[in-house]
Image 1 (cartoon, rainbow, N blue to C red):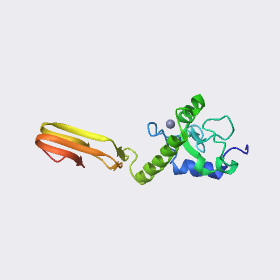
Image 2: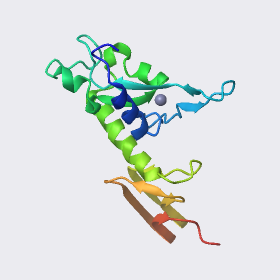
Image 3: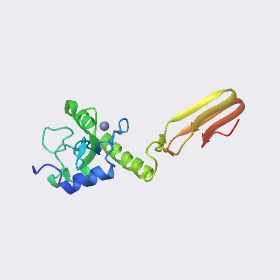
Length: 174
Ligand SMILES: [Zn+2]
């Protein structure tokens, strides 16, 4: 193993902390599955990627980082093979250190929030501004299943009739 790569215990920890799911919030691909032909093997398409490059000239290289910090868990993010390639294109210019750190932190939070939950109804994330106005049944933000409501989320409804800014949970019988 080259000196500038992550040690196996760090690779394992990063992958497991991400639940082997890609940390890109727009991707979240599963990266590991049981192999069909060989009952003892897996198909694995995950990558433990460097947030700041391991070597000078690499994507997001930070000259002030110590060699130890470069191979520490805080410089590692779990991605699928596609996203690991994508974030390094054009010298990584579209994917900053800040962005990748945010992906990592938010993904680990999302995984924690989904621990011991059904995979076909994971927590959704709600963010941004939600506004509605009109006459009749007006609902600005309708959240059906379990959700994480991010700080700064705004919901505003106005009009005449049955006005609801935010409805959480199942719709009542009408
Ligand atoms: Zn991905």
